[in-house]
Length: 386
Image (cartoon, rainbow, N blue to C red; front, top):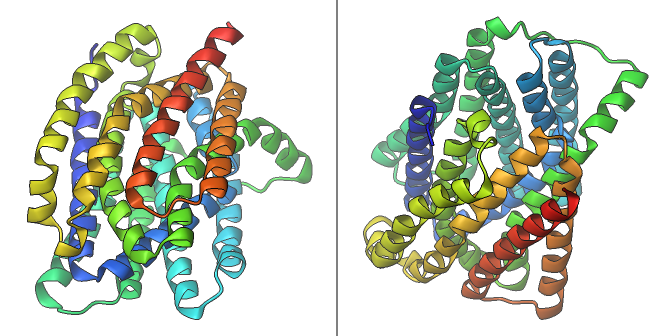
């Protein structure tokens, strides 16, 4: 299996920078404040889907299949409008306290801009613009890490809101640079009439529902953990989940950066690659997790090593499901993704509401179980639809 190593390597470095950024953030703020931040990120991750409405995946598919930018410009224009609306309305809907309102607004605005930057990056990747792809992958994570190093080195006490303001400023700067180096895409703002909006929503709705259920399955753990436990438990779970997410994103980025090659392979061949990469990753993580948390994290996170030992087992299932997902999108089988993630989300929601677990370890085991269930559902429905 041949890979585009430049994009894959840049993604690896980018995820490493993101991990170091979170690691320093954990050292700067208390466990409870990091728990509040993680909770805000989880809610914002779900809210931001309503600013996207499936445009991102549709734009990626359109970029793979056509050289024209007509649809792309309309999508970007539409997303810009919806993002602005969601950023200002969502805090009023989801948040009840003033302190969390400010934090949630900053997190949501920053996440919205980062999402926008990532969308344009994926369009470059679809069009095989390798130079732009690599620059956009690294620019924002590098600046975020630089900011955290400065704050850690020269300031003893920094509020989470100030840090989020810094992230937002970096996102705005990154968006400006993004627009400058993306001139070859000939992107421009276009107005849409009512008929065009309705037609676009019809085309993007399968992507929207897929992404809504997919993100909700992942983020619902932290949201319910805050409800049934406390911010300390959220922080412990989130620290472990950050490690998992960093590793999973590297696996997924390797596949997406070689997208057109990987979808031509059989699941058996892709599965072999995933297992060969997953097994040593799982073994090393479980062997050294206690040492990693003891060395890199404050004492309040010492029990998180047990959580990551469970979560890391989900890697092969998550990565395999991701391959099926992007393959279904490319083959215009988005409805399969919607059905799979909807069933998995409903089952998980029902389980959480009935059993009301309050232990991060239970949530980590639950996460693995539903990653396995999601992959099984995907295999069965894909085979049934053939």
